[in-house]
Length: 129
Image (tube, rainbow, N blue to C red; front, side, top):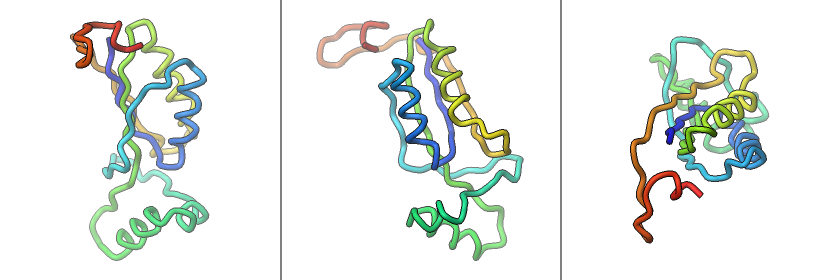
């Protein structure tokens, strides 16, 4: 099993969710919003995205006030997949989120040694289905 952690643009979460479901990987977790920064400058949200999303508008206004480096708001998604579905999951996330610009995000893959379904006590890959 593999744990896949992806940091993506806020505006890409719905397309990513749809793409993962279409690829047969509908189960994942997403955190509301995470903030951080990389080395690059990245591209920010468009004016329309800022105006349509109150959270983005608030973050943008607060960041414009300070002199320190701006933390960018992203979404963090995690999913656990069987080893044979790792490449499919990573490729789906990359293909959905790649714009060719700095700030597209990152994908991390780590091994998972065991899993246990609390209700049944089942262990291993069987708990992923």
